[in-house]
Length: 223
Image (cartoon, rainbow, N blue to C red):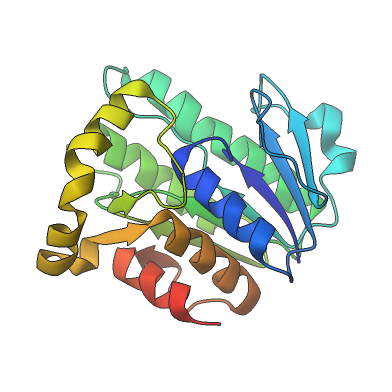
């Protein structure tokens, strides 16, 4: 399997990249990032582009792939809706339309989040925008598209949040993971499990187009 990863330097993306590097059936990985990463591996190729919303200059390098794991995202905190929509919905769909044109047999997996609003009419701005993005992706001519909606994600194997404020949040919440797993197991997962689940879903499919944390954990265990 040949895969493309967006957002491999973020927390979720780091975990997904790790699992792809470890999986012997993933033979080639193309990582598109805004800044160079420290990771080096024989089956990993990296393209650095400041503007990921326009991939026309590198379209010829984006064909022949079986799956795209889209882990790129930003927090909506402090952002106006128009700006959040531009970097969330518009950028994602621009990328997805390009990839769909180059890879009609591709499976596209998008990392959204628990609470995403598929109706697109709720009060929460981020949830509406994520819902719009999910709905539009599901309409694109991919072989298949799946929306991952994890809740709390425990970073594992040295994976760390990219931003300082998120690292502080995880420093506080991280030790509570065993409690959360016991009290609300359907809302928690790990970076390892998200990565394994993406590979398994890309390889075998899934019974649902939208996967919550409990579905991600189930897909993680399927080989």
